[in-house]
Amino acid sequence: MDSTTVYFSCFEKGFNVSSILASFSLFGHEITIRWYGAIIAFGFLLAVLWGGRMAYKWKMSLDKMIDILIAGTFGGIIGARAYYVIFRWEYYSAHPDEIIQIWNGGLAIYGGIIGALLCAFIMSRFNKLNFLNLLDCAGMSLLIGQGIGRWGNFANQEAFGTNTDMPWGMISEKTTTYLVDHKESLAQLGMNVDPYSPVHPTFLYESLWCLGSFLIILFVYKKCRRFSGQLFLMYGLFYGTGRAIIEGFRTDSLYIGDTTLRVSQVLSMAVALMFLIALIALTAKYKKHPKPIEGVDFFPEEEPKKAKKKNRASNEDLKTLAQKREEKVLSKDAQSNEEATSNTEQQ
Image 1 (cartoon, rainbow, N blue to C red):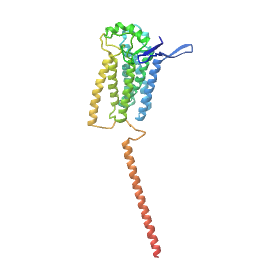
Image 2: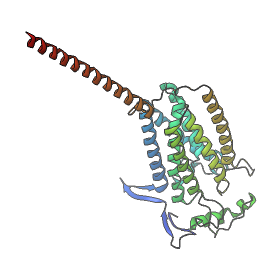
Image 3: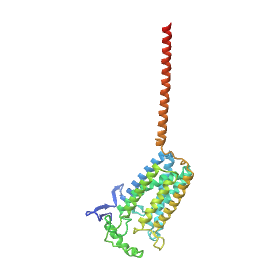
Image 4: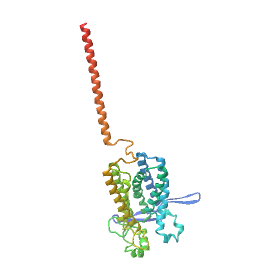
């Protein structure tokens, strides 16, 4: 099923959504480009551009950043798929040929983050880059990529939640088919769903949460960043909190064994708590012993406002002093001319 009509409770008209962006033949082979991959690639591109902009402003080596980007990309893809496959090994052990079929969905964001950060850490040590500053770049970039990438789930009509009567409730043939096929297993987990009623568009919730978190961290970055790693700790706190809440609505969660504990929900709560504790502790430490952020020049292109005002005041003082000196010189010259004229007249 490559396309379906999606209806939202607040709209009478439906939206035709296709999972395929383009399909064409190349050298006798049929090539299919799916919206899922294209949207994730677009989010990844914007995330890279933002990270590159931050690296440039902080005077970090772009060559070294590219090395880290390449390693982190491969690590992220492998980690995201491995995480998903491990927690659904009962299925993939019987269908090993589908393990590499990432274009059909099945990338776990936490696995991707773990894999990418592990590779980035190794490369940052090798390239002698400040890893905490690198994390701050990554945190903001991840929010951009995640906020946009979640719309790939919309194209596939996946990552949705239980039934809702809210105006933004969503329903399509794909959501109905999925809920019909999984109704019994969901009931065993305590979720009684009606396949023919609208569901929570949890992909939308997470997208808005990520982009909103990005704007908040952007404000902190511009106005009150105090120490390396602060932005990444805020990322973990915001994303972990939002994901823990949103995951509770989803019908396609990964579970820990035969329990009703959702893997991402438990991990998100742990991440949010740990990052909150670290953020409070390091902020308190900074207040007691403030010091400049290592390896970062926030304004390579322009000076901070206070420095500008100070330099402007200094320049004005220099101009005033120069004018006074010039006036003294002119006064002395005029006095000398008057004395010379007076002597001439006397003679």
